Image (cartoon, rainbow, N blue to C red; front, top):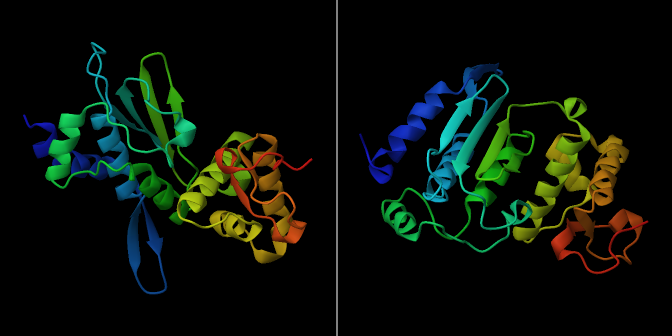
Length: 233
């Protein structure tokens, strides 16, 4: 038996060994690639441990691995709105545990975990994680690679919103060009990126940074950073 701090690295290695992988053949080498980025898995597992509610009896953090997804669940509802995970200041439910794991170099207490998860997901062009809150639990689902044409509307809107959040906290702006890069859309197909942006606007998750900007120069920000009147008709 190990404590959280002593056993965390071994736990992450054990989970990584269970995650399915694909073989990718490059120009000269064959490479084994895991379905989910190791850093994203590490951060989400750390969050599940650090933010669990020990007052919820008969339950503990769980990691379930399926062929097309991975679910990480912890007892306790989140202390902040899941839509604000990327930008919210750090809020710790178990401060002493957090300090111990930080001193051991196993995690950070400055709230950058979701930023790292978002970056890894975008870099590998995976569907955005899904956060679900039940009466007493929080569940985060990571999905394996899925082509844009195979994503449903909810998947697309969630990915565009996460992209807007990540660009905003990185002091960058979301544009049609950045959305094309996020989803691997070719430059001549900018209309497809525009449709993705419109879906997120219709869902009231993003808005215009400058409502007066011409169409070709439009930049987009998350709803919580958008000025009044930023949602175009």
